[in-house]
Image (cartoon, rainbow, N blue to C red; front, side):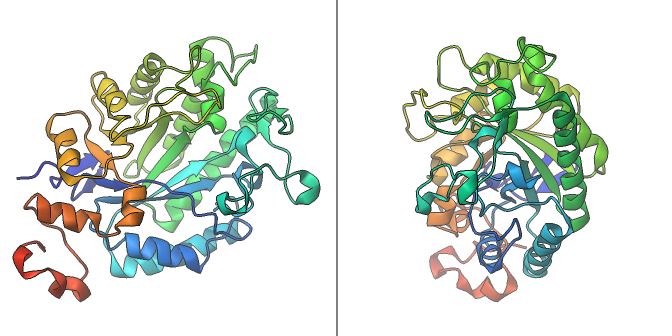
Length: 364
């Protein structure tokens, strides 16, 4: 029996297999509202055979978008547009659906990748970014406004309101984005957080914002909703957020009722020095898994089914996230199941699609 295709639980949510489609920004929303592109994109990924599909980073307020084209969940209109998409996806796929709640912090007001990936000034349709400290991400970017205590409280409330909207839409899982150099990660790292109040300085203080947001969201939604956190295990910069810091954060989150930890890395500093290779972030997941009892998701150039199987079989992680590889091959789980002599459940319309050599590929 394939370990990759064995069931697993995230809190009270049971998944058929351990393949996760992670959040991948599409830069295709209009004023935060989901569009027909999201229907197409999420629709075909929902037929992939993966165990879980997590919707892209979704801003909890307009200023929290990475770009003007980011998905949002800050009011009724944004919720209604996403609800329409999810209702149609659910008509044809039983795949559990999650959503990543996010705020871009100082990395906000950026053009989409195909439009230059550069900060947009306010006079050209952008907006003023905010951050724990007035330190821009790029040299030459506008200086972000340092968040006041009142503004921090409002931001926590924005996460809560977005979480409630997501629950009302019917998402099975909520993921809090505390990675990739965005707002919550900015609070964690001493490179971007130079505050001298209860949100800065010591590790305990720098973790406070992520822990406060998690607790507020966890308390605001039903216990049957899985709530997890995505983290950058390291900044890949000396003196920045470290793997040991991530272990401390993960153990704290577990004690607070976190259902899983999704382990990525980097994104906070242009000084990061990364050696990229298949599975280059898996050791981070392994280290965190050694210290927590909740499921850990590994990510990072995991493209081959046998390697994904080995990650689970050796206990390096409990689940694997396949992102760009899934965009390249939207039937990656089908092909993985065929290679590992396991099964996936396709929609009824595709039951006759299995090649003769894999006649036992499709199960119930």
